[in-house]
Structures are given as C-alpha cells and as structure tokens.
Length: 313
Image 1 (cartoon, helix red, strand yellow):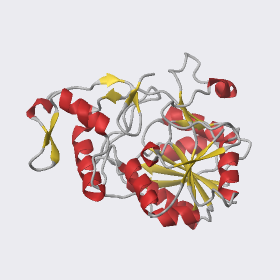
Image 2: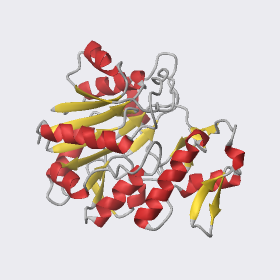
Image 3: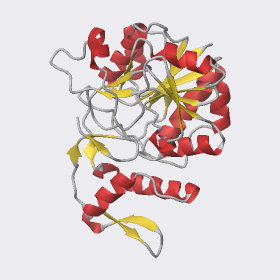
C-alpha cells in the first residue's frame, strides 16, 4: 500500500527537522511525504539541507502558527491560515502522486518507529480499512538543553488521557467522534473521498477537526483507535484561553453551529465568557466578542485538547 505522510508547516522549523528524522528512523518509512508550506520560504531549503526526499507544496502566506521554542514563525502576509485548505491541498497532491493511504502528521509530532506500519496494517484489514484511523499522542515536556533524544522517546509514552489508548497491536472501534483530532490520523484514498475533505468555511484556529469528524460520521465512516501507533507531540507554549484567536474561534464556532446545530469548543467559549471577553446572545443564538477583549494579552500557557479544554504540561 503506497503510504504518504502529509505535514503542514508555517514556522516550527526545529520541530519539522525532528519529525523528518523520526520518519527516517521509522520501521516502515513513507513512500512519499507531501509537506505543505503555508507561506514559509524556509521550508524547502530546510528539507533539502536534511537530505530528506519530501515533495514541497507552497501556498500563499497567511497568519503564522503560534510561536514555539523551535524559533519564530514567519511574518504574516495575509489573513489567518486556512488549515482546512492546506490539508485538502496536501491530500490532493498526495493522491495525484499515487497515494493509497494518507497519514496526516502535525508538524509538532514525531512518529514512533511503528506508527506507519500499524496504520498501514489497520488500513489493510477489511474490518477497519474504511474508517478514520487515529493513534495515541503523547504530549512531551519541554526539551532539555540538548533537545529531544529520538532514541529514547519511546520510553516517554504517556498518551493524552482523554483519548483511547488500546494495547499495542489492537484496534478499538469508537463512536466518540468529538475526540478526533488531526495531530495524527490516517485514511485510505476511498475513506478520504467518502468524507470529502475538510470544510474550508473555517478560518484560522479551531473547529475544523471536529467538523471533519462530523462529516465522517454523517457519511457513515467509522472511527478506529490504533493501539501502538504512537506520536510524540513536541512541547510549545499555547495560550489558555487563546485570547489572540478569539475572533477566529467565535467565527468558527458559528460556522459549526450553522452546519451541525450545536456549539463546539465549549471549553474555550466558557472560558472567554468567564473572562468577560465574549458572551452568548440568546436572542440571536450566537456568541459575540465584548469590548473587554480590546487590549487583552495572552492567557496562561497550557496545551489543549481538540474541544478547547486545557491540558497542563
């Protein structure tokens, strides 16, 4: 099965380097790797310097990803990043290059040695191959002065507690679609086509993963949790709540509500309301920003899960 990894990049260069090196050490290396550069001119030279055989697709610049310890993000030359569009472009490119299995790996994630092989085995199993395939993700602590040791990462396995973590070599059937996230997942060509890709009505930050999972459920596409397909999420600071993304989150929440009839990211919406930054307008059935948002800085630095709930690191 021709397996292609897809990664979106805007900054996070140190994280990308470790992901590429992790893939090189994989027990089953990818047949192809499509890296979508979101307006970041440094991506292609970085990949070339690593001597790594990736295919780079460059999209126009938008807003940067949040900064990380790996270095500053490139400056914004437009509006917020369209993560949905970038993922769809990456998938289209991979399929045009002959991919049979798409493995989406967030730029912050280093794959375990067995990740690709376990995704491929699940995709080849007629009981599971038509489903979305999700692996457990471990959030790493900040690296020491020498950085992360790829040879010792597997000793750090401690998956996110809010998501299933089946024993290695097993596959769990799930129906908890709201737990889906795009940090690490796989889909066959047929499954991707059945879901129809990510909805591009979402802009910037938040909501598109939950929408994608709802599209899958609506299309009758199953959900599987693949035991042992571990990914390791490199540490970076994020805000809790992400005040700098308030307007994007409110916009995306409204898009999701319009499409599915319920509010997503309730953890963040509640935190914004508690901080006086947003309020729910019951008469209009919408969330709106308040004047208190003006001049507010970033919130506390924590990691977060896909529903806007904080995860301390």
